[in-house]
Length: 453
Image 1 (cartoon, helix red, strand yellow):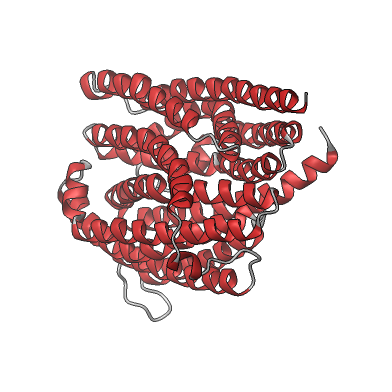
Image 2 (cartoon, one colour):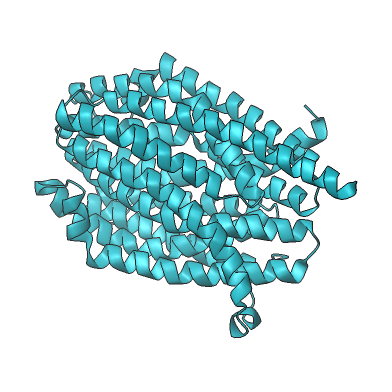
């Protein structure tokens, strides 16, 4: 590997990985604290709400608007088109605000129906409505902040979003402890306290990142681009957003369908699955972080028409992602009981037993998951968001859903079967994403040679 490229990849990727890890810690600490406060009912409540809203936010914002913003801002900067980069940043923010308002208000108004159709019943449904409605307020600001973060990442600035994540986590952890258990002068509020802590910390993070972006960033959203809207620019942005959003929709809807099936396996099985899912979500943060770095770095090189170096950056990101996620696989296999036991008390023996099995099966997913995330990021950086969508659609609805319907829905197999199914899905996605990445960049390099000739 080229040392210069490795250094640049790490300088962009590691802050992104750390930032995503810190955001995951919000969910993780919420689950750990409410799990120790209220057992498997509390874990199921926070887990279900988090799964549903994470899926929705990923579809519309994180893997929709944000991907379009990073790709276009990075490519236009690579081509030295500074004003055009600011225009795309402005349009991304405008679309992000509109979608954030729709998503957060829908979550607040339709919380009972969302949770009911997601499989919640009884106490989980009652507590879930309270949790979802409170967090939906903070979610509005969190989604807009995510768009602003993506604009910064398009300029290769991943350090400022990391600082925002640190601030959010410090506030959230303190308020979780204080409001869930009734410490530091706060009343004991349990799950409601966890929701308030999460919402408030996101609002503070939004204020910080907004001040930085509009005052110090070299790329700033500007009102003049909204006053003179360019339909062609909006079209270019939407052409990237829609396939990327549909890619996540294909995965998330299939995942939520699986969650509703697993709710019917019993609270112990569902709680075990949610704990293992949270742990795995932490594990694929390196792949996601290197994928984000890959989108920005490849986007800059594609903007420069330097496809050879773009390919080098992608392969370096992939190798480093494999190393980091391989380490996570080893942890899952060596210390599964220790990790799972952090989330529930020792009296929840069945939850721990099933969680260990889920986590050990999940270890096999890590390498192919890394390939999918990083090479998918490379394709998006080059302006191709359709290929990742097609791969995700096929894997989710030709592999995951049929197998889930048969093994979990029909046979009522143990919850760890879900993880074997997920492993098959990631294997398909990772292998095909790599092969199609190679084909696209071979074509791009061939086109450059033909133009030079």
